[in-house]
Amino acid sequence: MEAIYLDHAATTPVHDEVIEAMVPVYREVYGNPSSIHQYGRKARQVLDEARRKVAASIGAGEKEIIFTSGGTEADNLAIFGVTEELGEGHVVTTSIEHHAVLHAVAALEKQGFDVTYVAPEPDGAVTAEAVKEALREDTVLVSVMMVNNETGVRQPVEEIGEALKNHPAYFHSDAVQALGIENIDVRETAVDLLAFSGHKINGPKGIGFLFAREGVPLTPMTYGGEQERKRRAGTENVQAVKGLEKAMEMMEENREEHVAQYENYKKSFLSVLEEEEVSFEVNGQNTTAAIVNISFHNMDVETMLTNFDLEKVAASSGSACTAGSFEPSHVLSAMFPDDPERMRNSIRFSFGAANNETNVKEAARRVASIYRRLNK
Image (cartoon, rainbow, N blue to C red):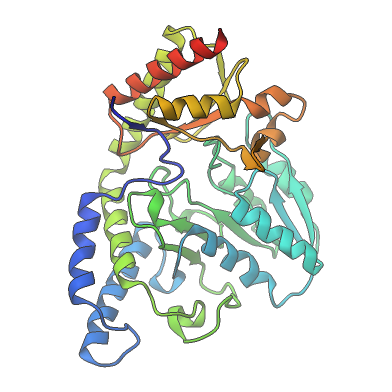
């Protein structure tokens, strides 16, 4: 039985061409890019070229790109970087953010910051009006993700940016799930800080970057050398940066084609479930192409995921496994506070490079078979 991977929102397989681009750098470019000798200059050349291409892919300037170890570090650098020197103030975020943001903001609360958590509507999105209403004179930071990682729901980042144009607060967005799917151009949005991760776009793990608009002050979170224009100390991971560059390049070349494919996969998957008479609801509206979150009636997450794994279908849930029991997803809890069943029976399926029309439909048939068996 073929194993079928439907968890691309968690991570993606590294593309062969990305690996091929990285291998020569591992073998031949081993100098420290901060060194002035020829080995260091060679590494610096690879680093600078990658930074140029990564910046161009989102319409940014080279000086606005900070390479990090991934999306979590990029989120943390943005959140703590702009608040460190302030010591106090008000922060606005949402109750459906990734934990890289929620836990960072919770740490700010312990330091004395006041935080407002904007709740989503039942469609999975917060409204720009609700974010605007949460603003205060002492608001120093607004953090709203671009695409939710559990439901795939797009958040109104452009509208929020417009609402903040006449407010001094900095605007940060976790764009990890948007990269490679959504059209991102920082010249057309008022976002000051955007966090990205390489392993969501068929690049290597351990590499990401933060876009920090020119003029936004950032206090470094690590101390050591003067790498990344004194904003992120530590010798740069040149090999992973090369992999990120290649993944971004391939993303730009094929984005529209891939988005159309993923939309078709999603439609095919849902169509098979309907044909097989599975009772379900899709959680969220206005979702990105690659993600669908489904509530299966009369089911529970733990049992379904265990059976999926036995049938070699990889999917995931936003529910957290704590001490052997599943706690409801914080995202679905925020969306459906009065529907405890829906909080506990939802599973995310996400499509990508490991899929084709055939294995997506086969996965849906296996899911339907499991559903019928468990329902008995």
